[in-house]
Image (cartoon, rainbow, N blue to C red):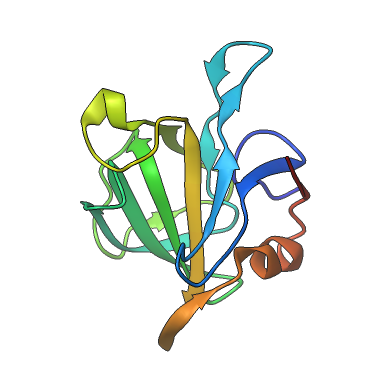
Length: 141
């Protein structure tokens, strides 16, 4: 099974809207009191990794299968990626961070902000369509 975080089904805490530009996925295990690692759902070719107003580190990559532009936000990446690096499917990318730890972004709760768009640009697409295409199970809180 393909995953974005190491649990299934994913718990979506913020649904998609054009203004938000993505979905928020819970990344805190309340039973264990630990962060859940963020993983690559498919093979990814890195376009860029940077810090910006989304909070903490951001990774923008192109999916090898989906041919979509994928953005992972609010993540403390375990590796520094360079443009054109290839990331194998299910590679652990890192864990999420919150504003109090790094001083970026507006959230006070651990989550992964996940966005998807087509390779030819345009507006952000609903990431739920990507999750369905990749066979990733999810639900809402």
